[in-house]
Each structure stands twice: as C-alpha cells, then as structure tokens.
Image (tube, rainbow over all chains, first blue to last red; front, side, top):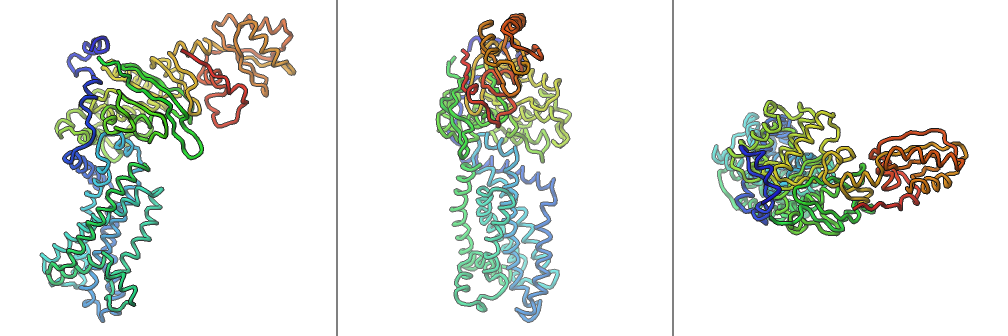
Amino acid sequence: MSTMTAEPAQRTQVRIPAVDPATAVARARPRTSVAETLSQTFSMAWRALKKMRRNPEQFFDVTIQPLLFTAMFAYIFGGAISGNVRSYLPLMIPGIVGQTVLTTCMATGVQLREDMDKGVFDRFKSLPIARIAPLAGPMIADLVRYLIAASLTFVMGVAIGYRPAGGALGVLGAIVLAIVTGWAIAWIFTFIGTIARNARSVQGFSMMILFPLTFLSNAFVPVSTLPGPLAAFVKVNPVSHLVSATRDLANHAVISGEVGWTLLACAIVIAIFAPLSVYSYKRHM
Amino acid sequence: MTTTASVTATGLVKAFGESRAVDGIDLEVRQGEIFGVLGPNGAGKTTTLRMLATLLPIDAGNAFVFGVDVAREPHRVRQLVGVTGQYASVDEDLTAAENLWLFGRLQGLRSADARATGHRLLEQFGLEDAARKPISQFSGGMRRRLDLAASLITRPPLIFLDEPTTGLDPRTRGQMWDTIRGLVADGCTIMLTTQYLDEADQLADRIAVIDRGRKVAEGTPDELKTSVGTSTLQLQLGEGADHDLARQVVWRVIGREPVVTPESGRLNVPLDAADEAGDVLIGLRQAGVTISSVSVAKPTLDEVFLALTGHGATEVDESHDTESNERLVEVR
C-alpha cells in the first residue's frame, strides 16, 4: 500500500478510500448463491415490467387476440361443431385460453431476442450475475401478460354468453393453471430466442411449433372426430392436457388428473429447456 | 502490496470462421497505469478487450486478470473489471437513475445503497439534472459518462474502456480524459482502446499498437514517437525519378528507411529533427533526383502505421505490397 495509494488518499480525503486490487481479488467469489440468483432474477423482472409500462404496445397481442379469436371462433365453428354457439363455448373457451397463452409464450421468445441484440445485454454479460437471471427475469414479468390473456378470454366468453359452471373459483383455478403452464412452455421459446439469428427467425421458427401444438389438440374439436393416428398424437399433446384440465376446472370446478399431467409436462419442459437456454446463452451470445 | 500485473495475456487468439481477428497477442498491463491499445478499425482491439472482459470465449492462449484465469474463473474476473464501450452500455428504456439502481441491485447492493451509489455517481459525472430524463434525450458526451458511471458501481480495480471518446467533440473529449485520469488517481488500472494517436499520447503510460490481429509495437508514447521520428518529410518525386536511388540517398544521409509508395511516386521520410529535412533535400539534389513537391508534417496515426506496418491506418482491408508489410518495428 505504498506509493500508489498515497497520493489519491489526499485527493479523495472526504470521499472514498482508494481502490485496492488485492482486497477485491480476495473478496471475489467463484459463483453466485441461490439467494443472489433469485434476487438478480427479480431485479431483471423489475426491469422488464418497467419496459412494459413504457411500451404499452407490448400489450396489443394479449388484449386484441383473446377478444378477436374468442368471438371469431365461436361464431365460425360454433354451429358446425356443437350445433349452436352457446353450447360450443364450454368446449371452446378453454381451448382459446390454451392457444392464447401459447401465442404469448412466443412473444416472450421474440422479445428476448430483440432485447439481447441491445448493448445493455453486453453489460449484463459483463456483470458477475447468474447467467439464468437475464432469461428468467423477463419471463417472470411476462406472468402479467399470461394473466391478462387468460382473464380476457374468460371475460369475452362471458360477454358472448358463456356461463362457466365451475363458478368463480373454478375459473380462477383455470387462470392460475394457464399462467403456470405459460411460464413453463415459454422456456421452449426462450431457448429458440437464444439460438436464432434474429427476432424475425424466432417468430418464423416458433410458428412452426405453435400451430401443430395448438391445432393438433382437443382445443377446438372433440378428439372422437379425429382419425386414429392424429387422435393418438392429440392425446399426448401437453396442450390437450392443459385444455382438458381447464375444462374440468372452469366447467365442473373439478381438479382432475389432467391437472397433474399438465404440471408434469410443465416440469419436463422446464427441466429440459431451462438448462439448454442457459447453456446456449453462455455459448452463442 | 502484490506485484501481480492487472492483465497478463499470452498468445491470445480469436478466430471468426477463416479469419483470425486476434492472432497471437501478448499483453502485460501493470497495476495503476493507463494502457492504450492503438489501432485502426478492424485491427482486433475490441475483440481483444472483449476476450479479456469474458464477453467472448478465448480460442487459444491464456489471460489472467490480477492473477485470476479469465477462461476458468470468469465469474471472479467479472467482479474485478468494469466494462464500458461501444457495446456494454445502458438500458434505453430506463432513466439514468434507474439504470444505475438496477446495476447496483444486480451486483448485490441493497435497494437504498444502490440508490445512494447511483446518486453519488450521477453527481460525480455531472448528470444529476438528467437523472430522470429518458436516455434518448442524452447527448453523446452524457451518454458516454453514464456508460462509464455504470461500470464504476462496485469500484472495480480494472476498467476496460473501448474507444471512450470516439465521436465526442474536443471539449467533451478533454473532460473524459480528466475523468479517466481521476480514476487512476483513485487506484484503478485502465486499459483503453483508441484510434487516435493523440489520445494515446495524452493519456496512456504505455501503448500497444495492434494491426490485423497482431501487436506490431509496444512502448511508452515517447518511445513510439521516436521510432517514427518527431516529424515526417513528405516528398513527391518528379516524373521518372529513380525511387531506389532516392531511398539509398535517404539511408546514406540520415540512416533511416523511408516509406516509398512507387505508384504515386511518394516518399515519406521519418525525421528525428526538422533540420534533417535540409540534409535529405541537398543529398537528393546532388544525386540528381527530381522533386515536385515537399512538405514537413508531425507524425499522425497514419504515419505511425505507415512506419510500423507499411500501410495506412484507414486502409486495412486493401492489399499492400508485401515487401513493406514485413517491416516490423521493435520498440522497447
């Protein structure tokens, strides 16, 4: 501590002591703790929420889509599938909930990719923070979007004549399940966000996953009307489980085994895609 | 006090496909100094910095920051360095105060401490009035100061600055230089990249000149300038003048190798003192070499590059005559 610090000590008497490399090296820890990781993730979520409030156009998809799709699907398919619109609604509304939440997941991936191309992401990379925090933070903020998307679908459904027999509690349960599933499935799109070249290719790639997942499910049509091989896929599609679980909750206030299957599928998706995303974020960015 | 260098790098390599952006660079940055990495666009300065700052994987060679291995313990290295550059910047959707608060929180400060630190830094950098303004309304200089402030929250002992004054007006540039000197006075080590010789000259204790991924010279600003000469005699030879003869004359008169551009008939002669210009001109007259124009100039970055690498600072991507490319100036 001799020559180098003597002069600055005078200069910065009232302020702060001089920077000392040896102490800094001794204090530098090899990795982040779980508590630090959580705190960093919530800080990143705070950032994402601030951005949402300042760019309200980010809410377009989660507001317009539920309103538009609910009305459109009800009046187009209602008569053909269930004889009339009203009796189609208990079948369809849970389907739209599943579809909307999935589309919102795609937006999570696209926005992450856009965000990652900005200079501030280099700053995040240069900081001693858990690599999962910049990925998981925005996803937590996106829970707000899943909430809006799922709730608006039910509101629109009620407006055009849907009367959920499961009551308020059943509907609430269905919304919570949709949010949880949305967060889990979003890891798939986050992973795509970390491997894709740019935001547009995330969108293109995600569409290819999204359409089969939503339409090859029981979201809009009864499985019994489908040919054998297709029905087999529909039965294992996690979206089908989400839609069935949502129907049981919203229409019968029953927490069925489908809820268990949905949560299991969520756990598997997270277990695979969360580590993959972090790995790919570390490698490619 | 330890004598560990701030940065030690040996044989650093970064390849992007076929091309080697950084092709075997050795560096040693001592504690408490300002180390300048000088080079034209595309020379590999930024890539080198990004590798040292853990932002890019190192393809070959190794690097240590205060003795900590950059490739093996990146998380520890990140606790020792601050990075400011064309890339690592701030969030444009947040205000200045929010940015600093966020970076403070991410690095483990309590909410109130993060706010206080942010406030102190904004004050230190003369940004307190702009604390709640959107970043989009910031001037270039304000933006650069905020970027730097964001790197100083945990007061890291080593700060990487990538072209800290590129695009700034002269006054703002001078302020940035003062800020950087202030950081060193507080005990920080600075490693900065720049395209400007005068910036390296004004700020740096030692300079490494980088060209096409390789280090072509290293030394103090004075050593570097001496190697180029204190000024340069620029000659335009007359029609049909003998370039080889002119070169021999210069060598005989002042003992230095001139840089010849045969296509345009130009001859650049590095001089130790401006008087030598007269000796060279007399020598050429006596040898019968005709001259169409003469000027004497201070060495610019372009001259330094011409002397060190045989090509100008701004024309890295063009092909050059290989003979002069092989000249490599060693400076101690």
